[in-house]
Amino acid sequence: MTKIKAWFAAARLRTLPLSVSGIIVGAGLASHYYYSSVLFWLAILVTIGFQVLSNFANDYGDGIRGTDTVRHGEKRMVASGIISPKEMKIGMIITGIITFFLATFLIFRAFGNENFVISFIFFNLTIVSIIAAVKYTVGKRAYGYSGLGDVFVFLFFGLLSVLGSYYLFTHQLQWQLLLPATAIGCFSTAVLNLNNMRDIENDAAAKKLTLVVKLGSTKAKKYHAFLLLFGMLCAVLYTIINYREPLQFIYLIAFVPFFLNIKTILKNKSPMLLDGELKKVALSTFLFAILFSIFM
Image (cartoon, rainbow, N blue to C red; front, side):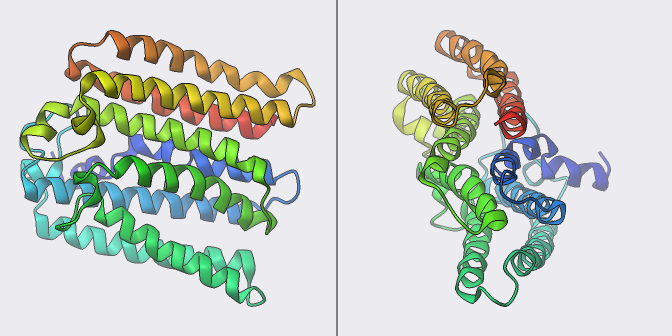
């Protein structure tokens, strides 16, 4: 594998559609009041930057801890020796700096010089997001090793992504937005849960105490079903509250793979077979985000 291909592999491009789903939903709902293609694409680029940084940090953190020495799914670059820890650390620094400047430009573009307090809050959220992306598996207190990954994914992929992007456009929030934000948060957390269910044996051996390792396989399956079902319920409730026409429910198409996924997960007895389910849930979430944002 060439270095260029290795860096693309480390970036895990297949995770990007899921990462921008919250931005798509937030921007779509905000478009009823105001829309700017410049703000939208800047927000997309910033989100991709955070995701790539998180993926680099995950590859680095698990690589130096030895967690990825034996694993199912895609090969990790640091653990396999294709990219050295030093090279990955440099990649993380460069990605972090680029993302920081993009986020700063996005904040300035959205709020200008007139809303200093709001700009200051978003600026600090940028710093917190960068730290969170790195600390998932890096450092002595990496929260991914203590079962808190689910909480951070729910907050950053769901609440912050949807509510934050909506506020960038409209400079206001509505309580109802918690419903689609919760839906995206639940779907995103379900993807992480699937990932951890696939890696449960390896993570347990490496003392990576993910929530799945703490719960055990049986409870993790029930937790997974809850995440998808509750997320779907939140989306439907939001639609009922804001109902105008039947076409608003077209996103239900994306829920079909969710129900099939729940059925598969509850019957699964081999964690190694769950890798394909990851893609299905991630892409279904992306499809939901697109349909929901267009027709809502």
